[in-house]
Image 1 (cartoon, rainbow, N blue to C red):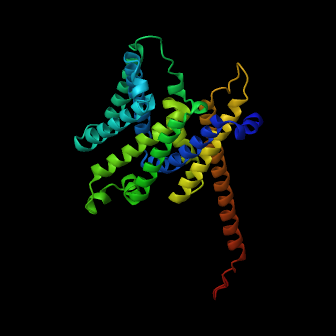
Image 2 (tube, rainbow, N blue to C red):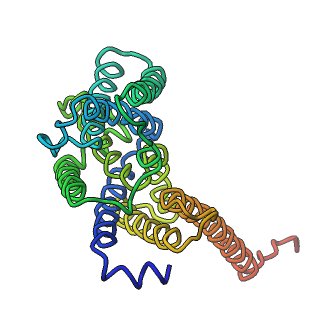
Image 3 (cartoon, helix red, strand yellow):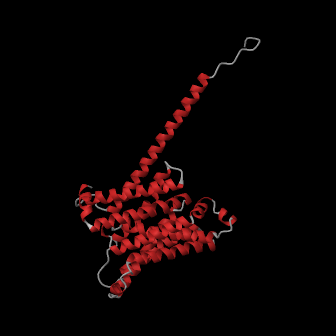
Length: 316
């Protein structure tokens, strides 16, 4: 950790990673709060794993047409993942909301098909083999300026949508019937929510990969919600917690030696988020026990201080 902090001001690569962590933490706090309130974490897993289909498609095209990467520099594998995420968001909304397909069936099918397509594209790519580790488990230490611009743009879009439709997303999470009573389209709000999830998943996948981004989106918010109750507070505190876990994970893995279990930044980030959730659970239990003891002692003191009843005429 000390080595990382020492080299941070002098390394543009580490500074870009730090900026990416800060931007991703904002998305994590805002969208993760909606996901936890809606109890829709399985949809996050389906979207995140289906990104591999878009990533593999772009890698396949770049192998098939070698000049494509030079002529279309914006067409990166993560841009393909974004297109796949948007397509999956549309399919989830149409199949489950408009055409009444079972939600768990839709999510399971998209989860499996997205990963299968990605593997097929990568295996069919002409030329040398492609290593998928950076896409599955993240590559936060090699964030390019173009990746950072994409992350910033997606972050701005997510914040704008959350600011514009916050009350609608809260209604969708708790009582979606309220949207119908207010004359609003539940399908449109659901689609906007799924698009926000897709963009956030693309941002977080560049930090911890498509496999682990669901945990990073859920765990900081779940840890914060055990101690806080107001939605704006949960969003702010969970965003800070996500940034601290990301910073700690990168710092710890940066100084890890060969053969260490802490060499993968994405894995260490999620492990720290898991420890934070465990700590919040223990703290909430301690606070609940303390509150119960205070209430019990207050009731006993009240009974002891209450005057004894006066005897009746018979002396009883």
